[in-house]
Image 1 (spheres, rainbow, N blue to C red):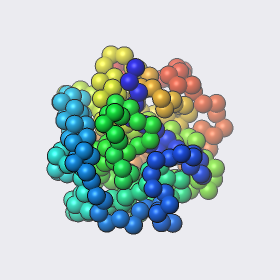
Image 2 (cartoon, helix red, strand yellow):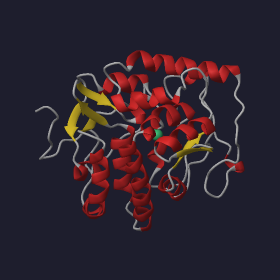
Image 3 (cartoon, rainbow, N blue to C red):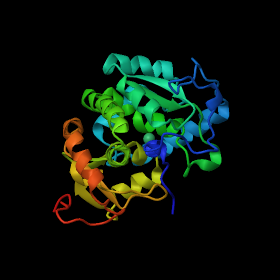
Image 4 (cartoon, rainbow, N blue to C red):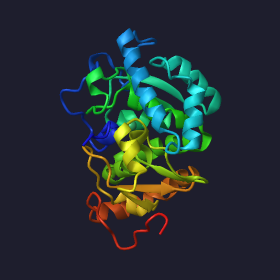
Length: 287
Ligand SMILES: [Fe+2]
C-alpha cells in the first residue's frame, strides 16, 4: 500500500528532533528558520514539482475543497517550485501571513512560535524523483502545496494563528499529545462538507495521491467533527487513515480552539482511543 506523505508536524509533542533528518539544520536561526532569501533550484527539482502537481491536479475535481482550490489557483505555482517571497506577497495581501524557509521538522516551541506570528515554515528541499509516492519527512511539496492554499482564506488563517498561541500555552502545561491529535486530524487530514458532497482540505490528504483517493472512497470511516473525540484519538503516521473527521465550515476550527483549554485537561486524563477505534457517542457522517 502506498503510504501517506507524512509525518510533517506529527513531531509535535517532542521538544527535540529525531536524528538523521535531511535538512540543513546547521544554518538555522534561533527561531528555526533559514536565512536564505532565495533558494537555488535545479531543472530536475522543477520537473519533480511539475510532475507532482500535475498528478494531484488530475484527481482534485470532486475531491479537493473549493476554498483550497481557489487558494491554489491564486498562488499560480503549477509550473515550478514556488518562490516563498512571491507567495508571501500574495498571502500578506489576503490574510497577513507569510512563508519562511526552514530545514524541515521544527521543535514544538519554534513551530508554534512561528504560527502565532502568522509565519508558516516551509521545508527548503524537495523530494527525489524516486520518492513521488512516499516520503518520511515533509518536503516543500507537502508544506507548500498542502498547507499554503488555505492560508489565503481569512477564517482558516485566523484559526491557524490561534492554534499557534494555543500550542505555546499547551507546551507550557505539558498537554501537547492531545493537541498534536487535533493538528493531525483537522489540519493534515480534515474533510469538509460542501454543497456537492464531501471534500478534502487537509494538507496530508491533498499532497498525497494515495490519501486523496482513499479519504474520499468508501473505505474509511468518516465522523462528524467533535473536538473532545479528536483530542483523544490516537493515530498512525505510516499508513492511510482509517478514520477522518468532517467539519461544516472553517469557522468550526476557530471555535474549537476557544473550547480547547478545558477539553485538553479532560483529554489528558482520559485513555486515548486507538487508531480506527470506535467510541460510544461516535456520530458517523451522513448517518
Ligand atoms: Fe504538514
